[in-house]
Length: 124
Image 1 (cartoon, one colour):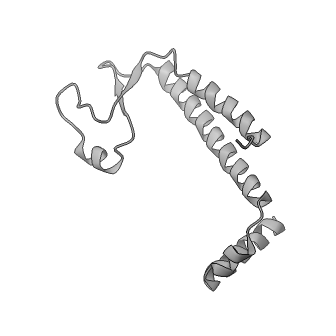
Image 2 (cartoon, rainbow, N blue to C red):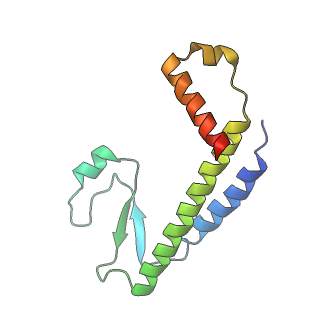
């Protein structure tokens, strides 16, 4: 089994810390997208478009101001985790060698775009 890139191990810890923050909250929860609302209504549009996403449920009284601010902080944290993952992927991909026969099999338009992208990365 291949070992993880060191940046990925740091990312995993960051992601797990973010997920663990949700463990003790009690003002909202998730239900399976297969389940229907407590009212018996189902969101058919969401089920067909994004069936893999769970549905968020909130108590009838809504979220407190504190919980709303906490969720915003968590959203910002998740965005940082996403940005870190994208940066790590970009770095790892830039370190990978691309086989010559693969490049030769690409249409010329794609090769031109790849060259433009690489020049853009070098000039940054």
